[in-house]
Length: 326
Ligand code: ADP
Ligand code: MG
Image (tube, rainbow, N blue to C red; front, side, top):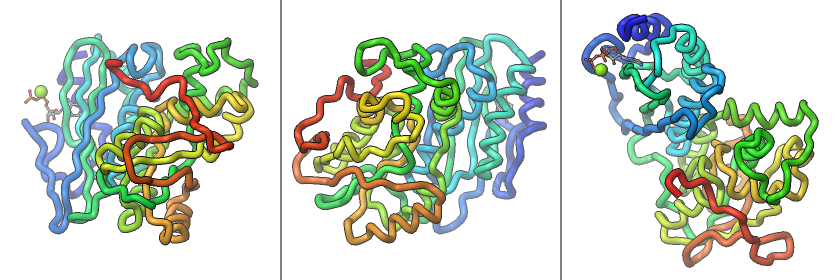
């Protein structure tokens, strides 16, 4: 199959939107930004062997490539609108591409984001997505707006994806010992969080006007909250015991879960700050967005993230977030 045929396959399956003036097929796309809005742009690349094992099902690669980008839009409070897809493929494999599009376009459709262009080349398997969203002018959630006295919140639960990486033998367990023996049904639940993360797009929208600062948790909670602190010129205190955990994670890792939750990464939850007087409004907004919210700490004067255990003593992480070039 030639490059042209691959692009035709993509074009035939991709849905469009009426604000796509010109989509796949010209030298560039023409997209209409409505008055009163800002364009929110983000890019994320997944490389085989680095961001996913080479034998990952193509539909899972497609889902995750878009989910990571939607999560970045979510953390800005943006409504997803358009994306581009740059594919590097070792060979022109229509079967692989079809499977990939099942995952990618399935998630795209669920969020009403249109694939408006891209690039298709031969090379090592790599998927680079640029996602574009819209936010009301001046309203975007940012990393640099946290204020001393804010509560620190997180959506959903943390640590499942990191647990799946440990159980899959991809990273060593936090204890340094062998991974725990875990029932197949529980291992499958954890693996699903790694394979098919849920970008918190509705939650991000619901937090506009409520949250002061927001970041999505992709590199690990403490690392990502650290970015908020640095950009905002503040510090944070986080109660490790308060970190929300799924029943599956508790069953699989018990007290060992904390390191996975604090530093594991790949969660794609939102961590945000909001003033205490808005606690009820935040809880209601998240409930309407269909996701749980948990208060895990507060913003303090100073710098850096201080994690404390149930006794209030400093909690020591074994690793502080996944660094690609660390
Ligand atoms: P050019 O050589 O002018 O860059 P291409 O032949 O690379 O054009 O692409 C032709 C059209 O197909 C363009 O509109 C481009 O955006 C689109 N396209 C190419 N690859 C992809 C892809 N992987 N996903 C979506 N659109 C693509
Ligand atoms: Mg091109």
